[in-house]
Every structure is written in C-alpha cells, then in structure tokens.
Image (cartoon, rainbow, N blue to C red):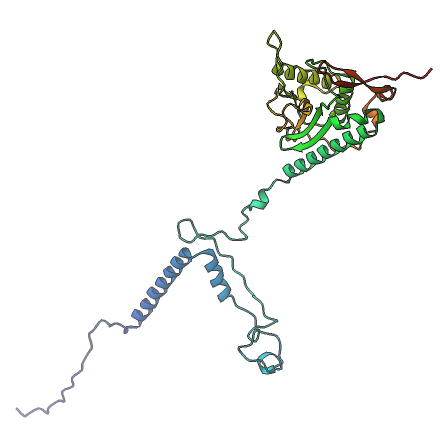
Length: 344
C-alpha cells in the first residue's frame, strides 16, 4: 500500500472558561461608599454634641460670600495697605449670601445654652409696673392730704393756735395724723373721753380731707405716764380706748364708712411721743393712720385742694368763736372754742 501523503496536524485551542471578574474597581467604589457613610454619621454625632453657639460659629465660618464687585486694584493692599493692617482683609461690599438656622441641641447632649434670641422671658419682661404706679399714686395722695390739712388750718385765724396740736408725718405704716395735747390746750377733759368742740372741729377737718381716699384707717388713743385709777379700776388703758372710740364715732359722723375702720385700740402710755419725757402733755394724743397699701386695688386719683369753706361747713360758726381758757382739775388752763361776746 502506497504510503498516503501526511496531512498537516492543526491544533485549535478553545477557551472553555465561563467568564472572569472585571478587576478590583468595585472594591474602590465600595470603600468610598463606606468612608462617606462613616463621615456622614460622624457629622451627625458632632452636630448633636456641640453647643448652639459652636454650631452658629461653624455655620458662619462655612457660609459662602460673594466676591467683591470692584474691578479696581487701587484700594486695600494694592493701594498701599499691608496685610497686617486692620481692615485690610475685609471687603466693604461683601456680605453673607446664605444664612443657615440650625436646630437647638437636644436635652442631655451636653453644653446646652440659651440663645439670646430664644424668646424666653427675661426678668425685666416679668416686671409689673402697675404696683409701682400704685405706690407712687398713694405717695401723691399722702403728700396732698398733708399739705391740704396744714394749709387749711393755717388759713383759719381762730384755729391758728391749734396748728401745734396737729402733727402729720409719713411713716412706714402709712400717713399718720395725730391730734396732740398742748400745755393748757387739751383735746379732752382730764380723765374724760368727751372731746372738746375744737377737737371735734379738728377731726371734722381731717375727715373732710381723707373722705375720698381709699385707704383703711387705724385709730389709737394714747395717754401720758401719769398714773390714773378710779375706785372701779378704770385706768389709762380704758381711758385711751374710750378716747379712740370717741374719735371713731366722730369720723363716722362725718361720713367715713364703717368698713374703712380697720382697728380701734387704746395704748395707754406704752408708745409715748416723747420717750424721754413720758409725763409730758404732748404724749396725750389721738392717732389716725391711713394704712399704706390698703387702698392699692382701688386708688383714688389726687384731687385739687378744696377751699376751707368746703372742708369745714361750719367755718363761719368757728369764725364767730374764740379760744377761751378754763381752769382744769390739774391746776392748769384748758383752751376751747366759745362764742365771742360782741361789744354792746
């Protein structure tokens, strides 16, 4: 058999693989994603752990600004300023273009502070001017009443001598009006609680001045330290209380309502006007106090002074009278108003 010619052998290599990966690019993308997420959560933690002031500072630092619209290079540093000179790095035309309002930090996050613009009330917001206005109005009432009493009494010649018997002062308790005995000019007969006519006129004058004022009244009677006792046990205590009650009846007679009377007390010689001279006649007195603050809910506006004829309806009768001295049981002389004896 003849040898057949040899055929060339062709080797064909076929890649039977099912495909491979496309390199490590996906790993880089995943690492970037994880890094971004970590940075995001770190940012959230920082925002929750700093104070409001720090957040505002960060916001202001990163707020974008607009560039200067000036095209000239003749100003600032190019105009001869140095970088260290104050204002050299500032732009007079630039301003914050964006403002960001960040939420306040939550309770418990540490470093909580109140923002100045938080809207919380300040102590000055809670101040109530009404109380101060009432106090001021009350002081004006007291001052006007004092002036009116003094001027009216000084304007009546027949009662001018009684001016020393009226003592008015402004005390922490209120406006205190005192009717005081003088040597030879008593408010009551010795040992008695029936007041003289001039005492009634003084109380009428006081009542007409304070009748429109809203404060409540405290009335007290005082004696000197001269011992006084009767067989029935009647003493300076009972005498001072009876004189205070006599004054209460008199002010009510002149239209002072009963609900304005806060208290009526007799203090005997326990509160002398002259502590160094407890037996002095001036320690015998009546005290009428307009209690401070008791009329604050309904303060009356100060009224213009009234003429003497309106304050004392019986002024013409007083002008027809004169002070006349009468002997008292202590060997002194007591002055009182009596009708004048016209010359025949």
